[in-house]
Image (cartoon, rainbow, N blue to C red; front, side, top):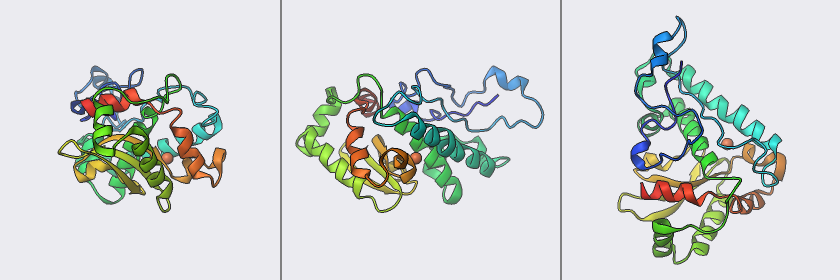
Length: 236
Ligand code: FE
């Protein structure tokens, strides 16, 4: 009965491929809402299905690691967000709108919900790694000199985030690509930029598999990176 979805408000960015095979909806009231039972919130934000099996990214990330990350941590952000906005005007917003407009606990949980959904789509078990193509590849070479230079800056930045956070590749309003560190729940949307690629460097993202070796986790990310997704978002 839930009609909220991670993609709400995002399709205009060209991220339409994000949730292929996932529970995709938008802000349009679905027919199923008419059968909603009393006491069930029609406004709940729904965690998108993982776009691959929990163990599909092994050996980079084991099924156990992904199980905790997706089913405990990511799910927990949706649960806390829904509890926080239930019965308020914020429940009428898209997740993207909440990331941009909200603050405090709502922002933290909305951004973490959005960030993880995006992160899952930044990786792919098949066809991962390799090199970016098309407009994204050209923009990376324009703004960083080479793909390797961008990857090094991204890896160094992500690995260097103090405490919990995210490494980001984002596009600013002028179309220029930038690598950004992000503390805690940071999302570039907050600064008017469009996220292109991210890696989660909270310890919960990698500790079962890598313990304190965050740099090894970030390096492994490149073997599973989904350049097709990044390219679609960039060109959107
Ligand atoms: Fe995480």
